[in-house]
Amino acid sequence: MKTINTMLFALLISLSSTSFAEYGYYDDERVTDQEIIVDLFLARPLGAVGSVLGMATQGIGLLFSVPGENFGETGEVLVEEPLNYTFNRPLGRFEE
Image (cartoon, rainbow, N blue to C red; front, side, top):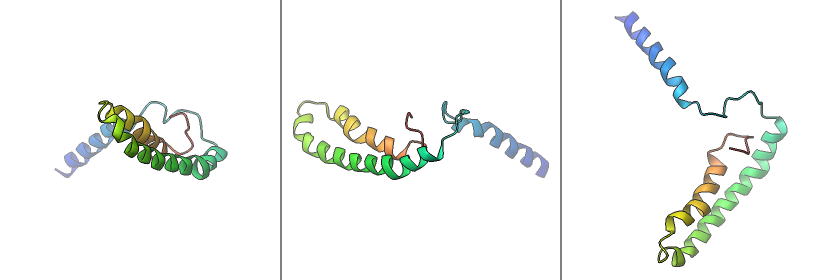
């Protein structure tokens, strides 16, 4: 029984490990030290400031986007994209 459990566990791990892989994250290009430093100390803080400014602009823009029925589009451009750029991108990868 222990052998079967071990084999099932190994099979489960081997099948699930590729489910998290996305095209472009595991390519042969290595991120340089300079790219990581620039991203960490310049791009990420600027992205956070942009996210906050986008949220403030979205709040003000509610007066116009709700009656115009394009709240989702403006929220995506002003809030979602800056947040994704700041927090959901691999460190040092600017094109993602």
